[in-house]
Image (tube, rainbow, N blue to C red; front, side, top):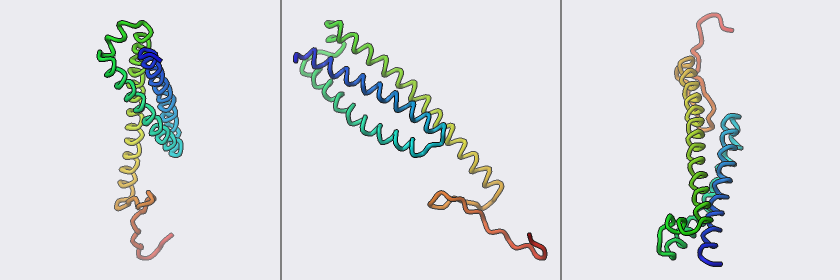
Length: 149
């Protein structure tokens, strides 16, 4: 396999990683919206595996470009197929950045909702707190003298 074909294969692998991450981001949004902790944890595990795969591809790309002795942009300018692959990868990267921002906003909103609920509970039940199991413990009520329900 010549250097151009090897670089094209690596760019294809990186694009496949982009597609897989896009799928994971969709699953992550769905898990957050459904309050599905197991689903969210599953997406995080899958992201870790994808990260390792993507890092190998990025290292291979960097090695191939270094061995070529010219920047990737120059290699792409010489080869229309590489130019197409680089452009497609760049577009996928921008789309992923937008998806990541959407996910971050969704997660921030979910956390703000939880924070707001906890604050409301604390106002309603002063002295309440969460224990290590994330179970809420309300303060003991003082026994009223006389009648009780």
